[in-house]
Image 1 (cartoon, rainbow over the protein chains, first blue to last red):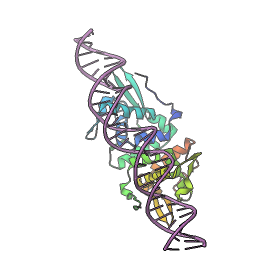
Image 2 (image 1 turned 60 degrees about the horizontal axis):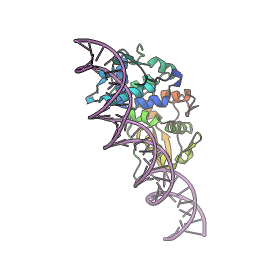
Image 3 (image 1 turned 120 degrees about the horizontal axis):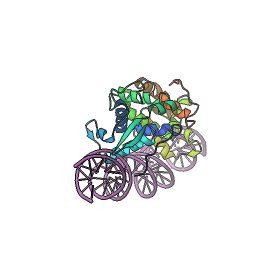
Image 4 (image 1 turned 60 degrees about the vertical axis):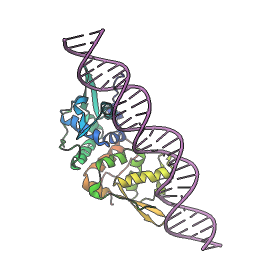
Length: 121
Length: 121
DNA sequence: TCTATTAGTTCCGAAGTTCCGAACTATGGG
DNA sequence: CCCATAGTTCGGAACTTCGGAACTAATAGA
């Protein structure tokens, strides 16, 4: 298993963030990671809405979020803990994440009841 | 030639907007349409940066932007004029477009020197 | 009306991406 | 060592995107 790659804050690209969050499953996963105190094992997100997501797809979704710079993943024993990189992204692109999360929330969609203020992350 | 489809303002989806703008060529095209007084013939965007975009790809990029609700395209004789739907998108998802355009601009990228305030259109 | 030109769309094959089950790797407990 | 749990990688099917060639639509000129 190769080590998990994370971009430096200054290497985070807007296109990668938009691509990562343009998938509503991934947007929901990201919203959930923020709500859950910014720490979440992959297995805690085995479903989005009514839809069960297979492990391999989930692993790929986490990879896309990680390589976009949206989350930081750390192995802790047998599991991986995922932290939101909200502060990093906010520092680099102020207002981008709140706007995206709000848009999903106001669409009544997948990422509803998401905090409008920066969570501790 | 079938008529050009445009979603109603209330049918605009965040995921579609993010997907449309997660491609840097499309983000550049959209930025250019706004800068150019919100009207632009497709042929005026035959290149993005140093890269020449073939007509068929360009046609598809405009279609993606149109179907995401970001632009309105009207046939005027032999050409198509594209208007930004900034006001519609801003009404539905306040702050989303400025945040995205700013993110690209502050990345020093493709959509630099883009207005930070809502343009006429 | 016929032809040419310009602007854009559609078609379709090649190339690339995503999805997901199966096989695999890594860690921890007994 | 064996088993269970958590996640990754592999690989094929399904889907998307790219771009050249052929097409449609409007317009101008003979």
